[in-house]
Image (cartoon, rainbow, N blue to C red; front, side, top):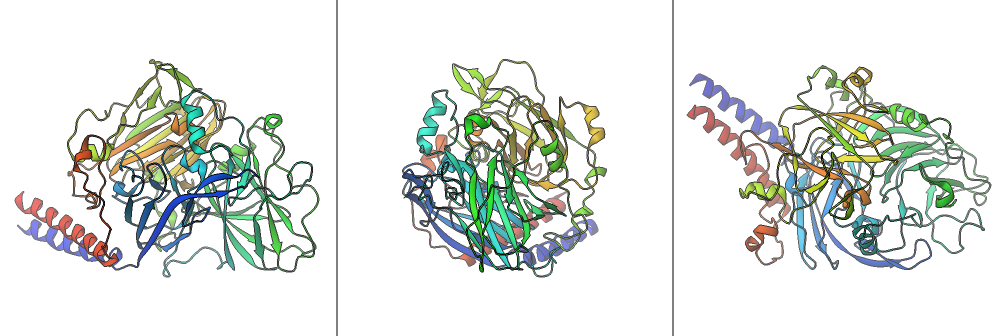
Length: 592
């Protein structure tokens, strides 16, 4: 009885502490209308996906632990889901916005995402996750600021600049889908956009006249934080700013050791923050360049993405050749060593006042290892598909998480192979079983000829090692066990491997995917199932009352009703969840 009483007291303290953090913080509510608009970033008129008539979409600017409600009106002619790249959705995969956890928002319907930016800071982005829609736009920035009590490990910048860089096709996303469905490659992109605009005409023989281009206005002597995201379809890009150093300070929610780069490779799906000081004279404007990496240059052509950095007292247009891209033809380790140089700043706080380095990942025993190998495209049932461990993911009509909740069988299996094999390739709806509170090692083995990037929803992981060749258990001897960067998206070089470690502290079913859209669409993804051993509605957030139903559960769907719930009601529901969790723990202890 005394033990039970102690647990009751402890639970009350936990409830009080949790309530002080979650429901007491600000709630931000926004409404986004997602639809088409016509633009011509490369001189060809085309429909892009815009949010509130903006391309790229509006900024979601919040602070750690804020509660957020985003009401999304789908004005497209096809289903829609928005996912939140790098946002961890603590115990709340219901809001993740991917097909394994959510039914899509039908055309003409609206749906409200409700979640908390729990213990996070940094630079992230959102985008539509279905059917190559990101290749048509629909993406936008998410900035999560530090709480006032947590110091930032650099001086307050004088301004904030977001740059979306990415390869771009003038074909619609529907046309690109058809190409993949017919077994074709997407081919060479038509150009590279910076903030949804084409290249500045730095060379009249290469760049057509009249293309819109991005101008970043700055004041001399001031320092700006540049938040850069590669939201392209499939191309790694190298970023550089003419005559300016880029001081790297953050990567996908982790403060980095601060070091200057004259250029940095940013792979598909990756995000970084730089501090750039305007310390040059204003005799001219300066080029901002994003150029393709690891591509066949003669096939690609010579036109990178080019924007303009313009001082307020500039005396003329940018001129001269573009700043040189890396020349690593004879140095295959240039880009890899650059990636290895990105380290965690273990002496600073991030979302909490304690230093980031207080989590000693090197002293935790690995409980599971997944070795996930991709290969060149394989033919399965006559179709050209992408695979992981020879499995090409086939999304079921019923989301995996929803099927679990309703005890449906046959929707998917949990026998996804954790190690490569020579088994015949196949299409399957299979998930990886992972143990809650375990410490997972994932090794990405890239046996293809292109750079791959992989992203894990719901988590950040420590990128502890990468090299060329085949990974073996002895490769662990070369892991960085002290200050590896913690992020959610990592590159894997062709003919090489990348190893990450992740603490499985977030219950749910989480998407592990190729960020290159063509590979993702063709099956290069899997879901990681982190089940709560205590059962549903103990640790994980409950199913939201506005949940959509589809597939085998479509008959449960009610007609669309306009949402009238206030932000306060959303907060009270979280209060109720916390209270219910504590009461269930108390009841379990007393009954035992």
